[in-house]
Amino acid sequence: MSRLIAATILITLFATMLQPTSAVRARGAASSIMQDSGSTIRGNARQRIDDDDDDDNDEVVFPNQRVGHPDTRILEKYSLVKIAQGSDPLENPSGIITQFGYLNDFPPQLVEATKTEPDENTYLVLKHNPGGPTPGYDYGRHFLFQGHENGSDLAYITRINLDVTDPGRRITLLTPVGSDGKTHFNAIDGSTWDPFTQTLLFTQENGSNGGVIEVTPDWPPVVRTLDGVIGKAGYEGIHPDDKGNLLLMEDSGGTSVNVDPSNPNSPRAARNPNSFVYRFIPYDPEDLFAGGKLQALQVLIGGAPLKFVPVDATHPTGDVFSDAQLQLHTPGTEWPARWVTVHDTAVNGAAAFNANAAAKAAGATPFKRPENAQFLPASGFDTFFFDATGDTSADSGNQPALAARGAWGSIFRVDFPGGAETGLLSIVVLGTAEQSSFDNLAFLDSHTLLATEDRGETLHRQLNLLDSVWAFNVRGHCSRSQRFIALGRDVQSELDAMLIEAGTPGLQNDGDNEPTGLFVSDGSASVHKILGKAADLNKARKFFTQQHGENVVYEILRAKD
Image (cartoon, rainbow, N blue to C red; front, side, top):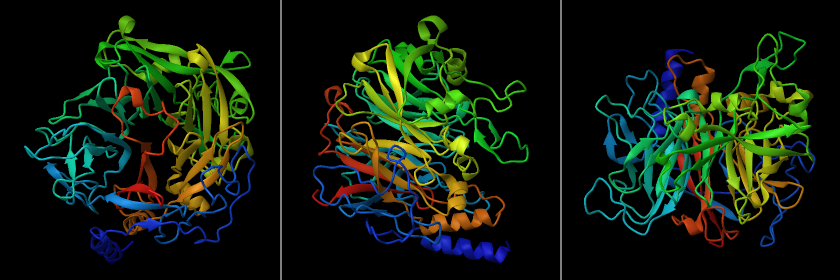
């Protein structure tokens, strides 16, 4: 690409950086893109979610093609209201961290400023003013917290003060840089409120350098890591139960192998299952630093534990094409599951440890990139759902043998009735080209599970489709579905995608937008009202983030609200 073309793109990008977008409403018939058919279990957009309170279950929202910068669309009875965007100023800038979603690092960056990718949101209602950098200022009682996924030791945590209208006090930085200009955090992804410790927990999706960060809510925040207690791993979703235990998902990739094992020249796009589902049982639910047991989920197929199989000379494709993986992903099946202890601070001490390696050594069951989980509302925390992203590649998904083994992604259900030692795992959704690459999860009501997609630019290009957010009715034995949001692509995201495809040297940002930060909660800080306990979510507020590009955070409003 010539310097003139690059300069033209960047001038256009700069000109659009500060221009806000209006609130977005659904336009269900805005596209005539045809959708693939699918079975009930695999999901089919033509089969509506059941909602006894709704009279428009026949509405169809079609996906957006990867062309230009189409609007984001949502079901007609909802609207999206912007509450923050990347160019918004921080109340207390620190070093090059000066805006909500952009670093002030151009230059030295060669092309543009780094976009920080605000990720999972946590909504919290406090009974007091937590304070902030401005002494005596009332920051309100309603807050939205999120970590940022950027790297280079410059990831950070922000608090959106939802009651504040002054743009200079609207967003507060909770993790300023140190004397070296770094925060020494990377890829902050998941977030949650722990009502037992009365602290916020954030995860770093950073492989063996990842882990869990604990942050106090009041000013000034106290920040510490839990590497010697919960371990270091590429953690994403994190969720407390009503006993103070923590459910954690790990996304640590996996070795890629040929999609056709008989053809060494076929694309290496099939990932070996490499990531685990964890449970941390603290000795003292009110003090995570007191230690505890880290456990990982183990599934038994045909009476034998399904364990990690490395890609090596003995197993050139690892466990990618195994019969056990096929059975694990077969709709209609149920398999025994149990927790196995991978680390105990009383036995192993409190030094930092590699949780992924410990899970493999303990014989836990790996999955294809588990991203997030949610407890089924009013299930007594005996049931949870989790998703696995899969391979995010049509080269893999278009191979029937791999599609049947979760290449397009999957959503599982795990039941431990009455807190039993042995439970059951079943697959609820086996992904397809239409519904794939599942990421964030949130319950919209007692039986409607929302799932975002994170297909990535490779799959976007391969299928010429952008991401969606799906609504699955998980009541009963079948999973009926409806597209809840058809994600668009903002101007900055489109321009970044153009720069990537032009091979622009020095570009450090992603292109296409991604839906993330999906969160539905009434914001209660109480143990007695912990998220997942009640079936009634009518008073809950709903948020999600259109990550990359303009890095916009939206609140989802319903017309009757």
